[in-house]
Length: 114
Image (cartoon, rainbow, N blue to C red; front, side, top):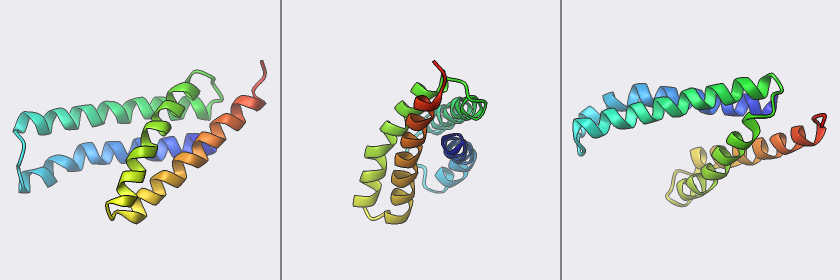
C-alpha cells in the first residue's frame, strides 16, 4: 500500500507537470513549440503508466513491481542531482520516497504467496 501511494503521488506529479509545463515554458520559450508539446505528451504517458502501476500495486498484483522498481531506481540519480544542485527539499523528498517505495515493494514481494 505504501509503494502504491508513493507511485500514485508521483503519477499525479507527472500529470500536473504535463499540464503546467506549457504555461511555464511559454514565458521563456527556449525550445521549439514541438519540443514543448512532445515533453507534455511524454510526461502525460509517464503519468498514465505510473497510474496503472499504482493501481496494480494497490490491488496486490505482481506485474507492477518490476516497473515500479525500475522507475524508482531511475529517480535515485535524478533526486541526488537535484539535492546537489541546490534543490534540496524536492530532491530529498524524491530520494527518500523512492527509497521507502523500493523497500515497500521488496517487502511486499517477500510476503506475496508463491
